[in-house]
Length: 375
Ligand SMILES: [Mg+2]
Image (cartoon, rainbow, N blue to C red; front, side, top):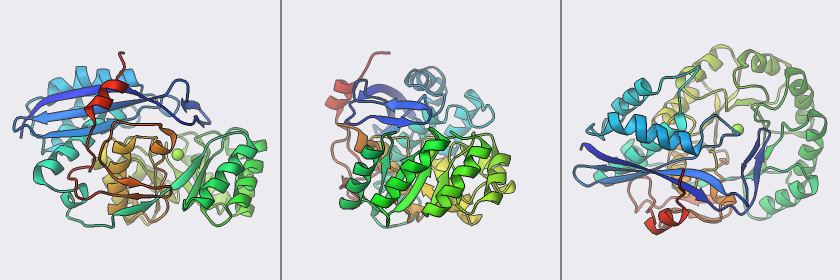
């Protein structure tokens, strides 16, 4: 099966609520959110769809860089290659776009990787899990993401999550060490029994993180995610020695190599697995398996991908046996996306549609055209 065409579709998807992290807005109701859908075709006319969701306030990739990287760097070296040899595809992509401190342009690479998994699954008439010789459960529990600096709004959202069957809450903090604990306390009070993950997105200094962690201990927070800068593994190790709240690393871990460094330095209790930051399903699966073997806890997350990226992630998280509610919240923020048939997403759960092969989503090309933007 030789790759004969790779198409990247830059999309602006409408949002129904704003989404802000400590680095700034990653999408809002006025401007929408940048997504790139990738379609790969082979010489036997098989097709696969993948998704890249760049957030330039979260990492350095943009909608423009994803599309130009795919069109000008990946497409010329991948046309004619065997679609079923994903390892070789990554080798070629990694030689064309080299790493910096860690993998280069993983979000663009993830779009290609997920499209190939989809294509191979459809060609072999298998779901993603079946490609990995496994048959995990079909449903996965979701956590509800709260990103606001308004305590009243945060409490309303926590009440909503509790009343609508969500199994966990993911609260964005890292805005102000002095004020964040007030928000954490109010949310914990509103939804005391849900799994409670707080994510600072690199927002604190070490001394601020130590202070905040003491408050989180008292409030019974389950996990404290990425309090310090991504490259500060020694700082995270120091923080771990000073608190008993489990520390999760997200922006610090992009590759298996990064994860192994974090394990060597005892910098985390938990690894956050995300397919887009890890260059696709291949890299994220490897990281999840290493973290499991190292006896770390796993958290599943996303970069607010639409239904296509969410579904690919849900396959992997089920395969890895992640039983904590996962942070796959794109459709919670999006008004609409180009997926036609796909999983059933009720408030707190994703139920995979295993009658559909590959990732398990059909793509509505009319919607691709409607949401497509010129760069
Ligand atoms: Mg995070």
